[in-house]
Image (tube, rainbow, N blue to C red; front, side, top):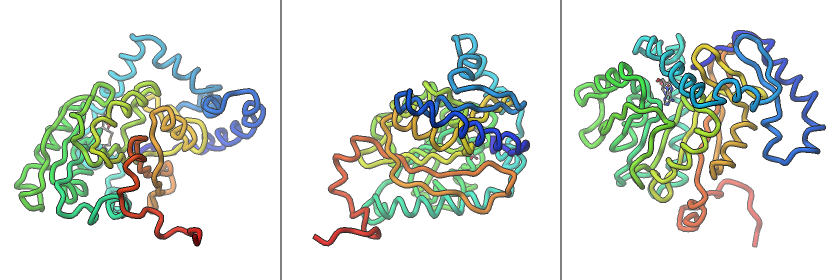
Length: 311
Ligand code: SAH
């Protein structure tokens, strides 16, 4: 899932394809269809002229959609419940990954929560949590309760073990609370439970329609002022379909189109640094909801460090 960019031709194709077709389509298509008109590739080098063509083949009827999700989870059922397993053989990227995530999370908590969240009872959800790597190394240190959502039972069992109180270096006020063995496309959170919903290296398993409906449902799970963090691989343009684990690496523009459809705003984003060159670039997005804007005025100043007009 971390997705080694094993064939560099993919990327040059993606860029070339974008340039060849981008401008004339822009003129004739409504804005939100532009990205979907950009072609993509699969991991065997097969070219698709657009995302619709690929999705029709992969999830075009209910049988195909069931197969897509069964094969996605089936892939992970065959993977060892270890750091190397969930990181596609790149266990050593755990450290730079957590470091960058922690810096990003700190900025967000400082910007958005009174007193950076200190003295508040904070709750997070770790989506597609695998063995609980992100919870153990990051979330449980900042949040009093972390729930985990993971469809592969042997990963969730490992997470339970890794996050047992005796295996955590945090005070008794911080803990892993609930463990849900469910895929994202079937999950509806309890209303208003979470300050942060963290989604890392798993959204590629969702088809576009399930991506959008997941976020629409998950929004109800946020407390007022809560937000999402989505950390994902980026395709340079269009998309790259992994035929083995049934996941899609989307471009930034593709993500933006889906955020719009989901009613989400990008509050901030940050690119991961320090990963091996052969991996896809990785971006962290902090996403807020539309209702969020209405309470924005009661929050600390968000633009204090940006240029501002003298009034
Ligand atoms: N987020 C974890 C694990 C990444 S590996 C980490 O960063 O360490 C990708 C994870 O996505 C696996 O645990 C896999 O089981 C999970 N996954 C696969 N299909 C999923 C789905 N439909 N919904 C939620 N998670 C899924």
